[in-house]
Image 1 (cartoon, rainbow, N blue to C red):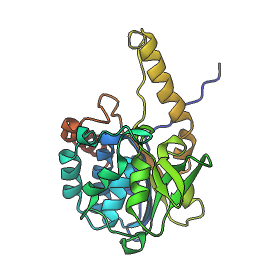
Image 2 (image 1 turned 30 degrees about the vertical axis):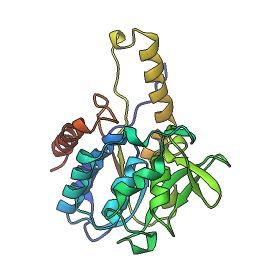
Image 3 (image 1 turned 180 degrees about the vertical axis):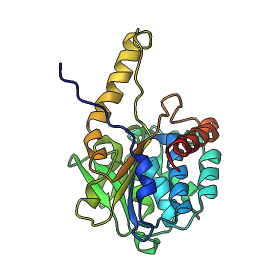
Image 4 (image 1 turned 120 degrees about the vertical axis):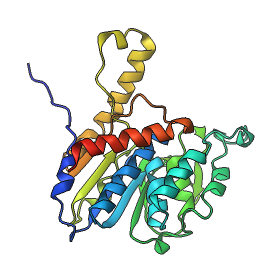
Length: 265
């Protein structure tokens, strides 16, 4: 019997990085689980490892755009703790989504720069162009709209109009946007926060549970091969947490911090 082995966390290799060489950082989507990206950034800071560029999707684009705008990790953590994803006063029936994405732009005021050109280093935002069915990586011009688009989960948040096209959650096609760094000379460090855990038989004893787990595996299958192409990637074990409950932010941060602490010197 031939079994394809699952990717194993390689974040221990972070200790082998030369702090004279900057890294490219890839941040996945994952709703509130994106908080786990923050301890990784802190670990890089503690080792005086500089960021050359960030490529990010969905929640990762929030973390990436704030960090590239000069926002501290403490401020980012507070943003996630104080921000309601589902603000019922913003429910709309006139758009292609339950919640009006544009309203969430107000939450980013003062948190991110107005344009990509004002950032501390290059940033690539993964979005899905719904008209053409392709991934678009924004890296210049206005910053807020691509970030909102990258976070616009289909069905929940309406797509964002950019240059007469509709853009939605980058995770639909590329939740681990490695592509912008294919030709880069610098090592890539990845952070993936929606890695599914192994299941026992009694955890797969209903139609809903089997469908839910299968969907997560399907999503992983389109991303996992990329992990092998990075210098180091951490796949945080966060399946116990919801991606939509801000009350779990502290627990997610603590779990991610402990996970890294166990694997780094």
